Amino acid sequence: MHPKTPKMILSVLCLLCLLNTERVIASSQKESPINFIIFVADDMAWDDSGPYGNTSVRTPNLDRLAAEGMRFDQAYLTCSSCSPSRCSMLTGRYPHNTGAGELHLPLPGDQLMLTSPLKSAGYWTAAVGKWHLGDAVSDQVDFRKASKPEQMGEAWVSAIQSRPKDKPFFLWAAHSDPHRGYSPGAVDPPHDPNSVIVPPFLPDTPLVREDIALYYDEVSRFDKHIGMVLSELDQQNLSDSTMILVISDNGRPFPHCKTMVTVPGVRTPFIVRLPGHVAPGSINKQLVSTVDIAPTVLDLAGVAAPESLQGKSFRPTLMNVDTKHRQHAFAEHNWHDYRALERAVYDNRFCYIRNWLPNTPATPPADAVNSVTYREMQRLYDEGRLTAEQQSCMVIPRAEEYLFDTHNDPNCLINLAGEPSVKSHLLRLRSVLEQWQVDTNDVNLAEENLTPDGFDRVTGTRMIDSSHPKIPRKKRVRNSGK
Image 1 (cartoon, rainbow, N blue to C red):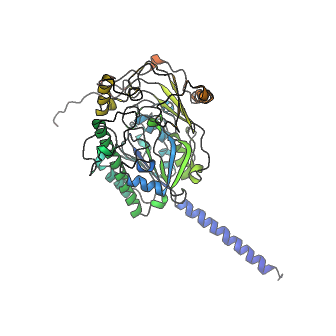
Image 2: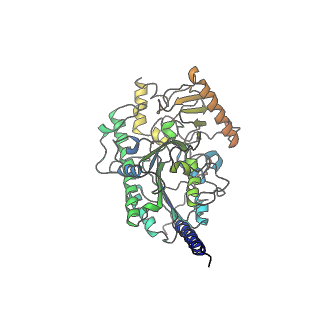
Image 3: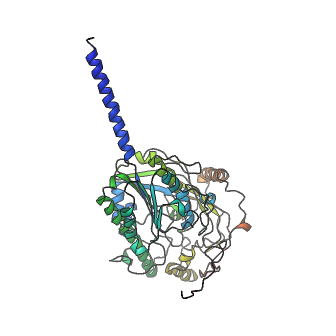
């Protein structure tokens, strides 16, 4: 035997052992795919929780997720309108490209949601809570169930308990909190109106504070129900293998927020927990968009992304907060109770907005028009006691272009569009927005083709028979007593 033969045999054995170990690790990774839960709040502001600095509202479970995961500080919705926003998230497409870019329009059956490729890859998919997508795409999830807001936590837990245990899962956990209307009793104890934070664009009166306190109560109930799911994941030893994302579909249901394409309307809470992948307690300053959610989930699941997706996976910046993700995020305002046409583009500093209806006021959605807060604002406006910022949603004409410094003016109250010192930023972002409209076929928009108002702008009274002017009125079926 050659004197080197034993060493050669030993080397070959070591190499085979190493290769076998790698195969075992790879096999183990394949056998342990990532589960996904996306918690969606209904009308929750990005900064109304503990992780984003509001300690007046009780959100211990969001605090926990932020401590155990990553908080994104520059995450933007594609619009501040319930159903278009949700359709955009699940398809990875911009609202005007989904066929459901206006409130209440159903998502067409030819639109592919991220759940379809997940199902094909062996995932069990569920949507529990608010659906708001229409019936044409309901077959793209394995399980769908509605729930009353006060029972949402139990419904989410039940879905996780009854899931097929031999499959990874995706759960779209969509709450209806903190959507209006409000009534006392959502949480015990309730929030103290004297302790709430009143944004500068709202008048600080006792009635407004009471309204905000009730909104806080429902934010806190949303948080409580998330906690119920976290406990269930711990009990089933699923916490380490489950990615959790907490987001909102649009801004708080108050004037100057919901339906607006400014920061209070489209910046969203965005908290991700994924043990072993995301550094605990990390803060991410990169720009992300909710159109990126679908490609990211598919990327983490190891599933090929369909060509229909318009977003991009933010997986690299999940692993390293210094990794750049995108230069710009885009948002749009289409019909939501009222006629509208606005587009916005964000970079890491500025927000540029193009408004095609300068002679139409920035009326908040009908539920906000019918709120205690708006009634207070109308009273104070008639008395000449609202500041210019507080009455901006009531007056016309409005500007055709806006430029806001989101670092120094996060509430977007000071329009810098006419300032020479920032003209280069305005021209640059105007060009970026125009190119995005061309690239996404958001062109040839004509005012005369816009969907008309569905509610009175002063009283909030409904003026249409259905939820949207283009949706036929449903025939009422008389109860025959059978």
